[in-house]
Image (cartoon, rainbow, N blue to C red; front, side, top):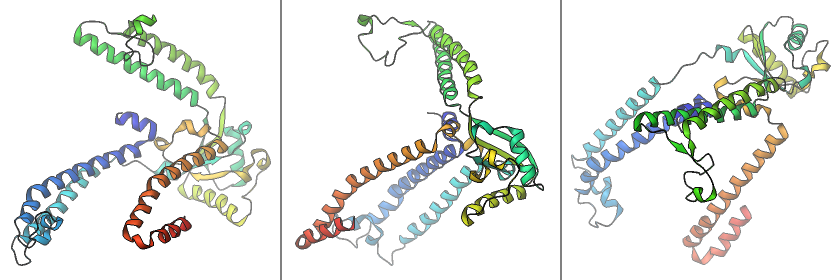
Length: 339
């Protein structure tokens, strides 16, 4: 899975996080190598710990406190710090600093009635309810889940066609394939009647078919609004005014300012938040209903809780038993009571 695919599915922040983890792995590998090559021989050369099999034989405790060899630890600590700074400077140099001006001026409105998702309607509401607020633009989100799935399959078909063309250029032969899942791994495809087809022709046909399906789906997708709008205000102060007005209304159980169409657009029940960066939004999930979202969240958290419970509880009980055999039953009962 490449960085482009990760950025497309999870956003640029996920790519930066994985890049940071790569730098951490490289840094720790270098630190481990230097510790084994430089520090470990210095520790072993000491004579404070007579038992070679003890762990202390490999640590700084094996070096005499008056030995000049301790300067090796001091110098290596400074070297580790310099290396860490160099790694972080190199990582930060690759960070893309985005313009957050639009993000600070954009609010995401949720729970708008789907039959009232019109730009002129939202503009009219803000113009009447907040006369001093200027709205630059209003954009709605649509149910593009099916469209995104088609685009994902089209992209895979395009990648398959590109790979097949490259293979043909290298070998001079047109590659063939079995157009089924695990077709390459199946050893009885010929006996089952599964015929091999030309890979370039197959992926070209699939790409054309999916492009046509996408054009048809666009008509349906952009007719089904999710009830979420992104409103860009003229200034950051205006966006903050609307944000605090709606969120303070929730805390104080009051209602935000009204317009002549407040009941139609159900503005009192809007959920107003600052919009995240467009690259950080998984647009397919905007069409998921709150009930399905909470159901999925509860299920995932319950699975994680069960896994952690069964993986950690037995080891904790066994560890507790090993510490005090005489009172193991009492300790286990206290542990289970605490759960």
